[in-house]
Image (cartoon, rainbow, N blue to C red; front, side, top):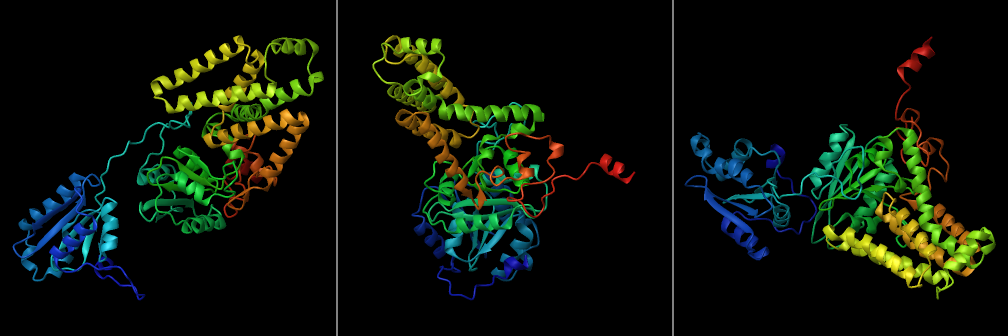
Length: 518
C-alpha cells in the first residue's frame, strides 16, 4: 500500500494535467472533456458531514454489483458503523484509511493525471475522487457482458476440446493459463490505437520461446502508430513479413488448445481485445495445413489426414490448369476413348476450355461468397442449390461441358479441406494464375509456375524463420511433425530455429533407463 500512497513523479518534464483538490472543479473538467455524455454517471455523496466525494463510472462498462456491494455500501453505510472516522483528523488520513481498510476489491490504483484517469474510466474502471485530495482511486470494476466461452465455429474438431476464444482479452488469457500452469508463461500488455486504445497481450513461455523472436514481436508492435485497432487482423497486417505477398506469414486460431500447443513449441501468441482470433508467430507453411485434432488421434490417422490435405491443396491449385493444358495442347496424353468422349461433349460448346474454366470458377466463387453473406438459415441451401441448378443448366444449354463441371466440382470440394481460411484464399487466387499459364503455355507453363511458386516460398521468412522450415532448411526433429506425424513418444525435441533454449520436450522413459542401468 505504501507504493500506492507515495507517488513518485518522474524527473522529466510531464505535460499531463494534474487533478486539483477541488472536487467540483475536477468533476467539471471530466464532464467537459467527455462532452457531458449521457452514459457518464457521477454519484456524489458524503462519507461524513465533513468529507465529500464522488464515484464516476461509464454506464454499461462496469459491474453494478461490485459498485454497490464493495464501494457505495462500504463508504456510505459500513464506514459509519466503525470507529474509523473518529480517529481521522485530516482528509489525507481519510484517503489513506480508505485505501488500507475500506475498499475490499483487489485491483486498485492511485492516479494524479486527468489523461490517465479518463483512460481508466473509458476502459471500465471506477474513479473515486475525494474533495480536498489532489489524487484519486482507480478501482477495477469492469463488468461488461461478453458472449461467453462457446464452441469454435470456423475451426471445428471431432475429437478434442470444444471451447474457443471470445472477444474479451482476460477470458482469452485465462483459457491459455488453464492449460499451461507454469510460472514461466509470460503475459505482457500494451495499448495500441490513439483513439481506440486497444489492449494487446503478448504471451510466450520464458526459457522456451526464442528471445530474438520475442524481441522482434515487441519491436514491430512498438512501431505501430494508428488511430484504431478493431480486430487482430489489423495487427496481423501491420507487423507481417512480405506485406504484398498473398501467402499468410502470421497464423491465427480461435482454439485455445492450438495456441497452447504453439506456445509449448516456442511460438509467441498475440491476443487483441475485441477479437476472438489469436495470432501465432512465426508462421510456417506446414503449420497452415495442420490442426490440433491431428494430435488427438493415433499417428496413423493423423498422418493419413495430413497427406489428404496436401493432395487436396494440389487438386485445388492445379486441377483446372491441368485439364486446360491437356485438352488444349497435349491431347496425346489422354487415352483414345477418353479423348473421343471429351471431344464429343465439347462439340457444341462455343468457348475454349480456358473460357469455360473461368466462367465456372468465377460463378462458383460468387456462389461461395453469397452463401457466406446470406443468413445462415438459407445461405448453405442457396449455395448448394445454385451450384446444382447452374451446373446442370449450363451443360444442357451447351455453354460448358460436363467434364468441366466435374473438374470445377472436384476443385471446389478440395478447397474446402484447407484448415485455415487464409491459406484457402491464397490457393484459390493462385489457381487463376495457373489457369492463365496453362492456357498460354500448356504443361510447360504449369511447370514454370510451380518453379516460381517454389522459389517464392523458399525465399520467404516469418519473423526470421524460413517459411518452409523444417523442409527447407531440413531439420530432423521438425520433420517428425510435418507432413508425416510421428508417434508422440518419438518427438523428443522442439524445432531449433523456433526454440533454441529448452529443446527437450520429453525425457527417455523410465523403462529404458532401467534397461540402460542393467
